[in-house]
Picture 1 (cartoon, rainbow, N blue to C red):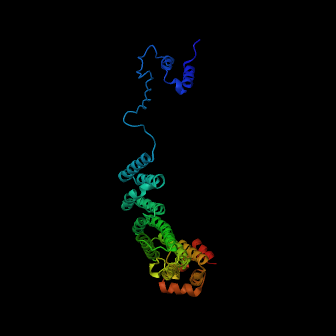
Picture 2: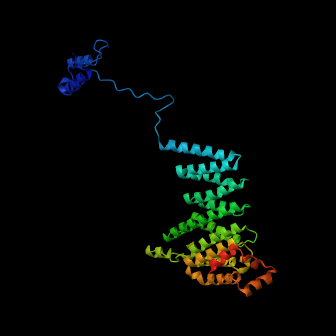
Picture 3: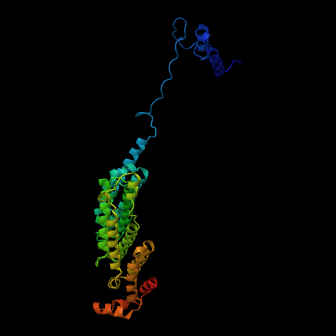
Amino acid sequence: MMPRKDTLHLSLNYFLSASRYQSSPHCCRLLLFCSGIGDHCPRRGAVGGRRAPLAAMPPKKKPPGGSVATPSLSSEDSWAREQAVRTLNDAKLATEASQKCTHLKQLMELVVHKDSGLLNEFCEPILEMRVDANALVRKTIAGLCEQIGVASVDQRAACMDCVQGLLQDETAAVQKAAIKSASTLFKTSFEYVLTHQKQGTKPTKHTKDLWKGSNRLKDDLKTLALSETANDGVKMQAVRFLEKTLIILGSFDGTAGATSGAASGKKTVASTLLLDPDQVATEADSVLGVLLECLKPESIAAQAATASLVMIASAVSVCEKCPQYCEFVAQALVDVAEVLGGGESGGSAIGAEDGSDAVDSKRDTPAVASVKKELR
């Protein structure tokens, strides 16, 4: 029984490992025999009795159309971009508002969560759809501004500009979505500016633009909260924004920047501080003035009781977070309590001035009862 070929090969390899046998003609003939080609293949050429070098293993065949396909970062990026372009086109060409919103949300998933490097490229085309004729699409864009602004500080200023325009939308649902995004954008921008100020570095143009955009949002929402023609739901959201903003500004530590500058041995010039303590305090007083204006008895009498509840709750929240404002807010709440809580002189005075019984007509409603409970 002949030994197996693989066994002969193993023995032969061990035999040829010794350098003194490698040049032997017998070894060459033995190699040809064991490989089964001694009698069927032409003898390989040899020089000086030596065995000719074995040919190198041929490379693997390439698949038709190019090299072997291996997953790489660049191919994944290319795939994500192609998908993003296709999804954006689908959103722009869709005829139904619901389809557009679905494609926009899918696009956000690609450029924010799948490949955030694509966000700078696709942000502008997304924000351009804020002028869509359908209110549902504009509302979706207002919500996407919040996501983009949080995910990319580079695009936050552009999102603020978009939200500022949507605050003037004719549809209340769009305005409320824009106000919600404005709250997040203001908070994140304030924290970003404060972080850079604590580092004692000179503010860049980008940082200045962020703070300017934040102030524009704040000013527009102050106007919206005092508007007599605005929807009650919109005014409620605007008051909520002012409540959060006042808490942020009222909790500001004026030593930020000065402390870091002293620690680093540098002098911080007050004119270079975006968050100057005096200016921040002035802005906080301005926001507080708007909230107190919303709590005036005549303002309460002219709006829905649910809106009054929200405004009272916002005032109480400010007192809890910023005790320095309690003195002013408490007096405003007392005035409201005198009108809604059964104060004869207050109620008759308002009725005489307006020539109506607006306050009296609301006293027995469940909503007004809730207002009274909140005041107590």
